[in-house]
Length: 107
Image (cartoon, rainbow, N blue to C red; front, side):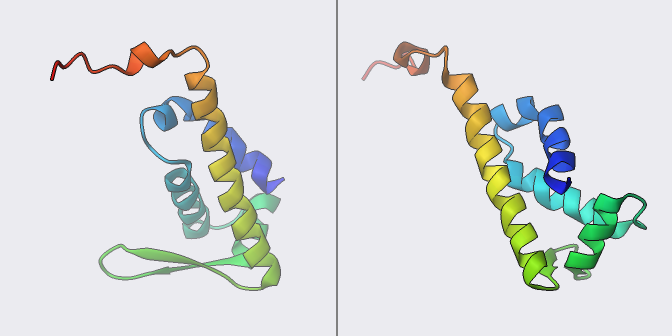
C-alpha cells in the first residue's frame, strides 16, 4: 500500500530520473512532505506512526524509524527507490548504442 503510493509519485517523475535526479531524493522529499502535514489516509497514518522527522533550523533533516517495523518500512522504501531508478535507466538504455555516447572530441 505504501510502496504503491510512492511508486505513483516515481512514475510521474520518470523523466526527471533519466535527467539525473535520484529516486532517493524523491523518497526523502515525499516522506518529509507526508510527515509535515496532518495524516488523512491510512498510508499517511502508518508513515506517521513508523517514521519520525528530525529537522534543524538550517533545514537539514533526518528520517528516523520509531520501531523495528519502521526500520523495515524505511529500508523497503529505500530499496524500492533504487530498484525503480535502475528500471527506468535500463529502459532508457534499451535503444542506445555505444556510438550514442561518443563525445566527438578528437585527441
